[in-house]
Image 1 (cartoon, rainbow, N blue to C red):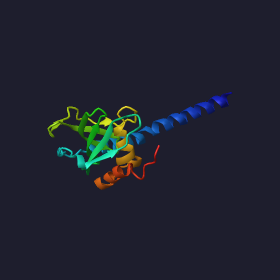
Image 2 (cartoon, rainbow, N blue to C red; image 1 turned 120 degrees about the vertical axis):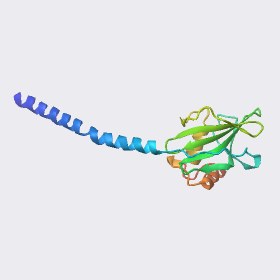
Image 3 (cartoon, rainbow, N blue to C red; image 1 turned 30 degrees about the horizontal axis):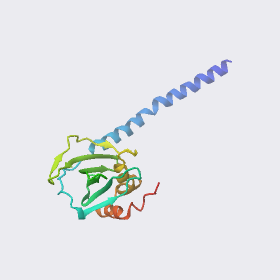
Image 4 (spheres, one colour; image 1 turned 60 degrees about the vertical axis):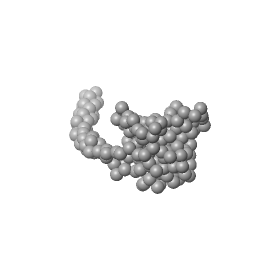
Length: 179
């Protein structure tokens, strides 16, 4: 019986020793990751010209919507900061049209709206300057479609604007597996 108690205490001591030795290594990794995240700096963004109908590239979102979705091919850029920026145009079945200048960050699966288009072709800067997680939900799935199917295949950013435009023209990026 004493041998079993000694053995059990020995195992507990080894487990505790291992427990207390591991966290410093993990803490260093976490601190490095935090430092890398904090180092990211978004570059300054200039608002693009209002989109012209001849530059709009349609893209498929889902069968669950009657809206039509377009990206202005001229406004499409892939920044050195790792953000794909574009003008998004959503045409509702009833004729209403929403225009926004947006960005997708493939590395973190986030999006943001820089500005909303006005009827006169000018922009109104967004009041919310924060990044939001791209969610793949039936309502408002257009951001998820752009992320998964066109601009961030496999979670990696496209190399340049030409690759992104090509994905839009093809109906999806070649590296994207259709679900």
